[in-house]
Length: 219
Image (cartoon, rainbow, N blue to C red; front, side, top):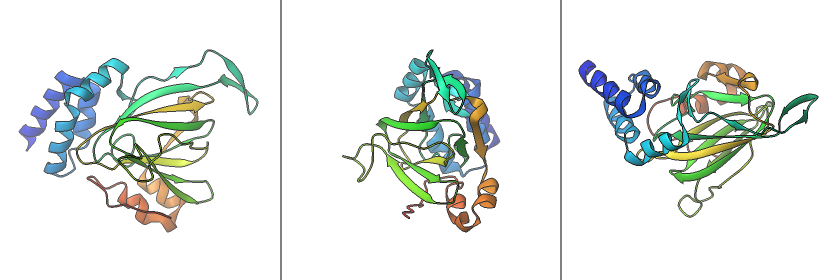
């Protein structure tokens, strides 16, 4: 098993670079079948072509392209910021959270607008600061009933994304108004979210468990 891990990591370095290989090794704690599916998808030619064309890589703990920000600035809540930004990301099959392991996020300064482009549908789990839970599926409504091509995540919302597929990646992007900055971005672990919203512990555990989820939760 250790030899297989090393061989997979070496192959990923060749195809995708050191950062992406490191992300795969981080997930070695999952089962062998899950690891095999993850590796097989991460080296798909179409995915590699997309990542190279759009500059998507393992960046600050997530698979992103570096955000493109508007040169125009305006005052938002008394602070001058770029009026908008845009970035691409790829969600792996069975992926949970932008780091693949169930990490939640919150932005304190901007609204996010997720946009579906290609591949599998993804499920966004969201909590308003008061503990109100909401779920939205981002994808092609012709393939996934009730899915949306685009929606809005208001600032201060806790959110995470979950793949609905165990075979195909999802290619999505985010527009942010005002422009996204790392300073206004916060990450939250399973334990962090359980501490904030203890009544919803089952949701947090479901979306932090490797593999295709059965968390078809509609509230």
